[in-house]
Length: 204
Image (tube, rainbow, N blue to C red; front, side):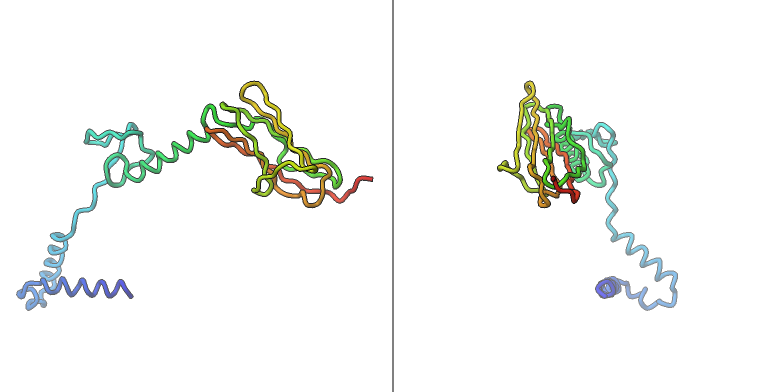
């Protein structure tokens, strides 16, 4: 409905600009159509020209150089515009997670684990990074801390490694869930997940 109202208003505005000779000679439909086409062509603003970038960030036909090579062709503007900013942000994210000195988990327990009620559950994580990463254990997205039935042990390995072991003893039905080992330093973060379930068999 709004589109029809806008179109009707535009028609009235254009109709008021018609010359009197065109209005009186409406019998000649070809002349009427030609006048409308000329009127629109004269008043329409030109479409924005697309600017293509080379792989080095230089606009074709110009001397403007972008600070970093854009990831996409720029639609409007110099230096890549919005597309360049999106590509630049993705590059920064990739550098964070793939940093040479970033924390990386090298070894970890199996993804899925089935335990027996009353027995011990053990998860293991080994991570490296410079500086040495810090390991945090989480259950269902919430950080967990040591208590008498939930033990966390850590060992340093060389100058940039750390081992962490989480033990639940004895295991109960409440220990079912999704556990995560998160290694983090100032350059990167890495995670591993472990899903647990139990079997209905009690210790004699």
